[in-house]
Structure formats: C-alpha cells, structure tokens
Image: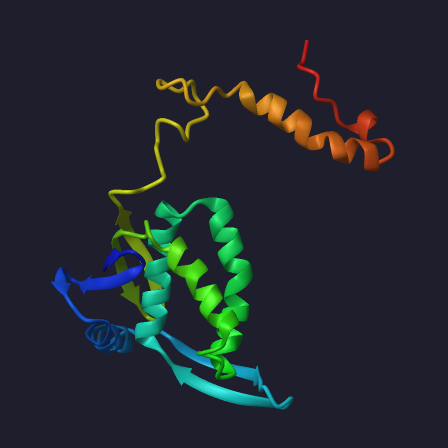
Length: 189
C-alpha cells in the first residue's frame, strides 16, 4: 500500500481513488477474515448496544497507516494525536462533522499527516495482519543514529545516556525514601 500525505493512493502498485482503495481492501481482507468485530457500545443517548461489524478494508487501512506513521511521525506529535483521536472519533460518531471543534481538530490531523508518505507491505492470514516491510523517502529512522554503539556520525554518543538517566531519576530520588540505598548510578569500580 502506498501513502502520500497520510492518504492511501495505491494498492498492489495500482493507483486508486479512496473509494477504490476501500473496495479493493474489503475484497482482499474479507477473504482472510480480517476486521470482524463483536462489541458492546455506549450510545450517545446513554444505553449500551451490541454491534457485530465487518470492516476488512478499514482495519487493513488503519493498520497500514499506523505502520507508515511509525517511520515518519515524531514521537511527541504521535502522542498528541493519540490523545485527540478519541475525541475526534466521538465528534464524528455523534454527528458533529461540521462543528467548529471537529474542524479545528482536523487542522491538527492534516498537519500531522504532511510527511506520512511511503509504502507498507502486508501479509494477511486467518484474521491476522503482519508487516512484511515498510519504507519512506521521509523516514525519521536512521540506523546510524539509532545505535547503542559509537555513532559514525557523532550525532549520538552512548555516554550521553548516563547523564540523561541521572537527570530523569532526580524526581524519583526525592519522592522515594530509601531510593538511594537501593539504587546507585555510580559507575562500578
């Protein structure tokens, strides 16, 4: 699946409209039992209801989208997005598509998707979706930086972690009696 700015634009190398993407993924996913959900919901009016849904295309699209985001989206932006998504979904579910708060959230979501571009390869089998590969021309993953060895680029020095850990633990040392006696950040002699 190919993504551009957060939108799936091709399946199996064939460019498609959003409707064609969903139709194609529904057909492929349905054959593999993807996206079957049995749930009890909390309705807006206060009652619980049971729903059994089949959403193969949506399930595959959501999974693939998250995979490309894992390469291209900054951690803190992703955390913020994850906090806001339940509210966004609730607004849509309750029928507030044209509300000012949904429109404001959409501006944030649109901004987060600017670099969500790349390709995700998946394998489907008996209701499961597995990643076979992912790549992006704007990937934030750099194996030369993400190493616990000495970085050839000098962007990361493993010794930097010691100071970070020490500073991050300061608040814990003050809150936990006996913390100092149980944990030591001194280098072994």
